[in-house]
Amino acid sequence: MTTFAALGDPTRLSLVRRLGRGSRLNVSQLTSGMGVSRQAVTKHLAVLHEAGIVSRTEAGRQTVYELRGEQLAEASEFLARISAGWDRALERLRAHAEEG
Amino acid sequence: MSERPSQHEGTQSVVRTVVLHAPVERVWRALTDHREFGAWFKARIDQPFEVGRTQTGGMLEPGFEYYLWSSTVVTMDAPHRFAFRWPHPRDPHARSYEGEPTTLVTFELEPVPEGTRLTITESGFEAIDEERRAASMRENAQGWEIQAQRIAAHLGA
Image 1 (cartoon, rainbow over the protein chains, first blue to last red):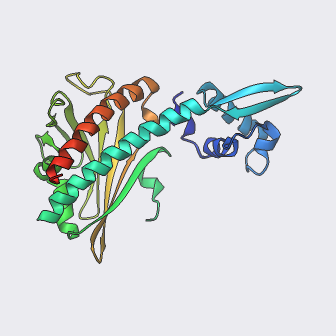
Image 2: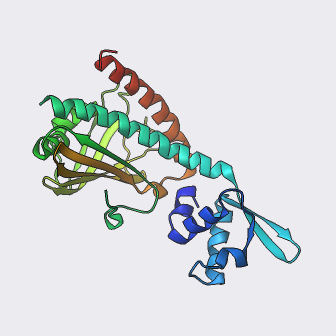
Image 3: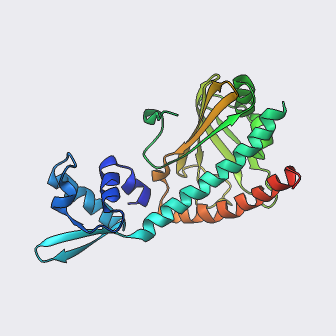
């Protein structure tokens, strides 16, 4: 699954936000206040893991999840480039439309 | 500007808003007349924009003439909303981009005292897989760099 597809779900996006800023969290911590079941969270984490967005480590009987930066950096750089392209196209549209 | 997620796709999108000092009707024409669109976008677009129709043509960027123009109009709601899908090809040198993943480009126009507030949303990037995204990134990086130089020249810098 692609990074974008993995992120194209509100629950998964919330999980990624929670794991942001270097947090290392287990499934219980990630489920708390999420409004979806523990099983659902586990399933979403599996998708994020498969897409390489999170890593998981066994800590005793717990599985701890952590964000991996590279995939997200690549995805956000791609979108940044598209944005920059539109910015430049818009400046040309501005000149075109405002001139008459 | 308020989000209208139902008209866009997925959660991975690029959104840009600008205020243009021109009336909505003028901006609408610059966007939906295929010749005018081509003039500012630097593309040759061979067919008029019509809902359900596909336009073909080519980019006019020097060095990027191999890049095809391809769009399929989804919405034309004058003078407020214009949307088309276009491909992000894995190989821009291909002679057809059919079957390549597409994103949805939406232009929304809103009258404001200064003229027109235009919001461009490109959405649906979920469709593009890693390999294509990497290729698309390389192409875009080169393409936009050249466009930036042209704008600078155009502005008399």
